[in-house]
Amino acid sequence: MTPTSTINSANLKSQLKRAERRHLIRSYNLILPLFAFILISFLIPLGIVFYNSIYDPQVATGLPKTVESLKDWDVRSTPYPSENSFAALAAEMKTASDNQTASGIASRLNYEGSGLRTLFMKTSREVEDVDDGPWQEKFIAIDKNWAQPEIWSVIRQTGSFYTSGYYLKALDMQRDPFDNIEKQPADARIYIDVFARTLFISGLVTVFCFLLGYPIAYLLSKLPARTSNLLMIFVLLPFWTSMLVRTTAWIVLLQKGGVINSTLLSLGLISEPLDLMFNRFGVVVAMTHILLPFMILPLFSVMKSVPSTYVRAARSLGASPWTAFWKIYFPQSMPGVSAGGLLVFILAIGYYITPTLLGGAGDQMISYFIADNLSRSLNWGLASALGCILLAGILVFYSFYEKYVGVSNVKLG
Image (cartoon, rainbow, N blue to C red):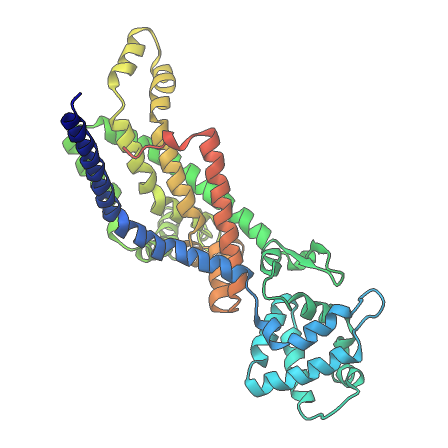
């Protein structure tokens, strides 16, 4: 090889590398808007939610000296701390009242124990007019609860900027005065049952969507294209109306004076109206109807791609219609079943409007309690912890799904 040809070859390689680099940069630039969209609309909000679930500055910034003095308190030796802790709390209550932060501190303490907001605010008002101690006697004279170790334990346990308290509460657990983790009293446990109920209703809706959606998708896939396209409009029709409208329509149908009860009464099939809403039945029926298209569409797309020759071959070899369907056709439709089941289940877990309007007190799902903590209780930390646990549950479900079913088997068409 001559020196000239060697130089040309090196130049060609260099040009090829530059061309590949430009192509790579162009590709990255094309996906940059998508990455920015995911970052702004998903990853950053998710990070903020997680941060809110562990960040707890209210007591740490409002009562720093009290929290510091409580580090030397041994709850096993004395039921309440020393005079220094009472004096520090009295001084910081006055400061909080002047700075108008007492209400926020009281609300944060109340998240850990019912009645602590009333106790804190009442004591703040009382000590504001007192100039000096001894503070132990004066606090206990204002309210005897100040002699209880649980009150001071709550102040000490919430005195850190970062806490696991919201997650413990979301799992129906708490810390006792000795900082041991224990279950909450039976009458205060809420969220484990709500999580279990959410999973049960979501699973039930997924099963009903499969049982109803599979025959419909099978029928549509076997009809001529013109007829199936026409009938597909009826599947897509619910997407053209809002979920609130569809839920309201179910209220009209299921209420005691609604269409179904009136029809059954007029036919003499029942003697009094049935309870069809404000219970689990109404929630499952309405959610199944609303989520049914998410099962039918992936099933239909996969079934359209299943060759009919396989079933005909099985039949020609002596298989019965049921055997040919079950052994040959159904396994080939499983990617659609997987995709539809995954879509319906994950969407059902986060449902809020339908259970709220059609369910009773014992039928509300976890989304209701997240919204309640955000809007009524203003306990954003607990709402964030509930949301993060829900997300973690979905990821665990997804990992099991990947292990036993395989995401590669999921097809939308």
